[in-house]
Every structure is written in structure tokens, then in C-alpha cells.
Image (cartoon, rainbow over all chains, first blue to last red; front, side):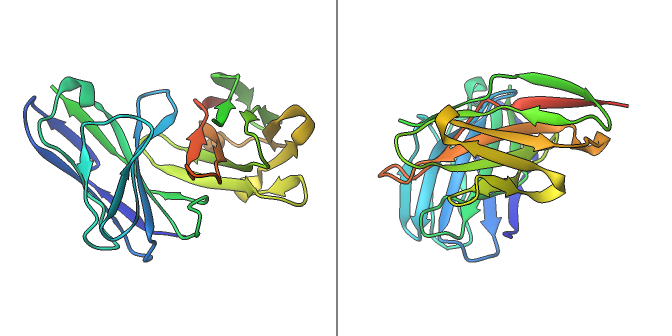
Length: 113
Length: 114
């Protein structure tokens, strides 16, 4: 089972600020994912990566960007936060070739005032 | 495109009672199916998965699920619910096509009464 860490766990920030949500995993998984989850709703894939220097956008359009410079690290950045970005952001990684089985971090709950 | 429907938004059961959470999927090929549980303020934990073979799969924490192709269902069951099972439960289907991603249902919130 993967150990996946997300920081911060909670973040309250003002409109217009630049923020970076951190995600790290210690198991050497090539595949990593970012999901957005509104309260009481399903998860929506916003970004994924199949390895270093590989990033793709998911189904849900997002103004955030990601980078994958190291295998264990997959940060998500919002250049200018807005209230519409208020949500929970979940990071996941997968050890399988297809990415079917995913292990999730505890999430970051972001509130933009 | 694949989709997952969890018809029950909220279910309440008494501790010790049996539980069944419903999940219906739409997917053209043989699906990879998952159940995840999410406790308040936490990420998702994998309960069980179905890829192929025996249609009744066992998971952690005493949960099981049955794949029924004819009904496009993958319902989650537990014979005796514990107070610690109160959480949100998500069913998911994995697309093995070009998209290769998990699609989640909207979740079922489980409340357990003492």
C-alpha cells in the first residue's frame, strides 16, 4: 500500500493569491493523479501523470497546473486563486501498468475568500 | 463513455443490522470495478475490487460485493454494520480504453444509529 502525503491539509486564502498544493508518495509509483471533489459530490479527474516530465489534463477543466520533475512529487499550482476554486483536492498514485488501482492521500481542503 | 450511478444518496441503518449499498455502471467492455470508503476529512480507502473471475469479492473490514453483469450492478454488502462504518462510500469503474481513468459515482453517505 502506498504512503501518500498531502500538504497543507486545510488552506484558507484570499482571492488572487498564488498557491501550491503538495503531493508526495514514497512508493515509487509512476502514475499520479489529482482529483477535485466538491462536498457530497463525486471525484473529478483534473490532472494526471504517467511519469517524470509527463502531465495531462483530465476530464474536468481546471485552471490549475501541475508539474512532475521527480517521481515522488506531483504539486498542483493555482496562479490566482478565486472563490470558485474552493473545493477538496485529492491526490492519488497507482502501482499498476494501467493505473486501475489507485491509492489516495488525505486531501487538501481549500477555501478561497 | 463509462458512468456510475449510486441511487441512494443517504442510508441510515442501526448498528448490527445488515447493509447493502447499490451501484450501477455503464461500460461497454468488461469493467474493472471498485468500492472506496471516505471518512470525514480523509482521503479514499480501497475496500475491494473486481477485475474478473469469481463474481463475489471479499474486501477489508468485512465488506463484500457481487458483480452481476446482467444487471450492470456491483452492490456492496456487510452482514453486520459497526458504528465505525459510518462514512461515505464511492463506487468506481475503470476504463481500460484510451482514457484509462477511474470514474466515480456521487457517493452514498452511511449513518449508523446506536
